[in-house]
Length: 146
Image (cartoon, rainbow, N blue to C red; front, side):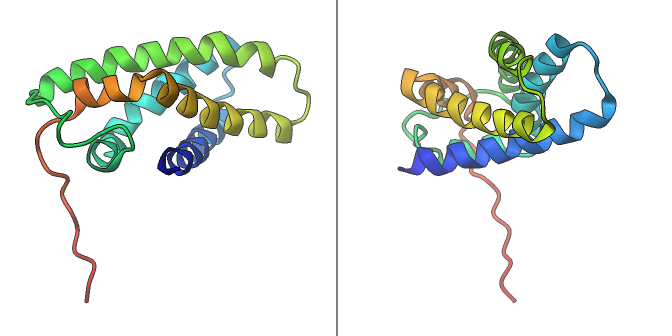
């Protein structure tokens, strides 16, 4: 059930990215969806969503974590971001083309984010992600107690 909540978070995250990309007015829908998928994965690295997932993700556990260097992980993130951009390029534009209202487009992006996360979980991409991207360094925790 934990992956269901992760998928909802991912759906909100990609919807926010979609809304942030709209003002750029990228006319080519293929470039737009590639960029959306690429940025979804790439920015998650810099926002430390990957670190959170490595420590608490449904498919990740301390047994899967390798001793990769940060540079090796960054190289993996870039190549995986390109692949994620291509996957969004294959799925998104075909459905998006038929949607007329902006509300339906936003809903589609939300559903796309949710379903891609669930599908990735189902076919084992998240286990592979944990094995290739999680560094054996604990996530920094911030003490917010007063």
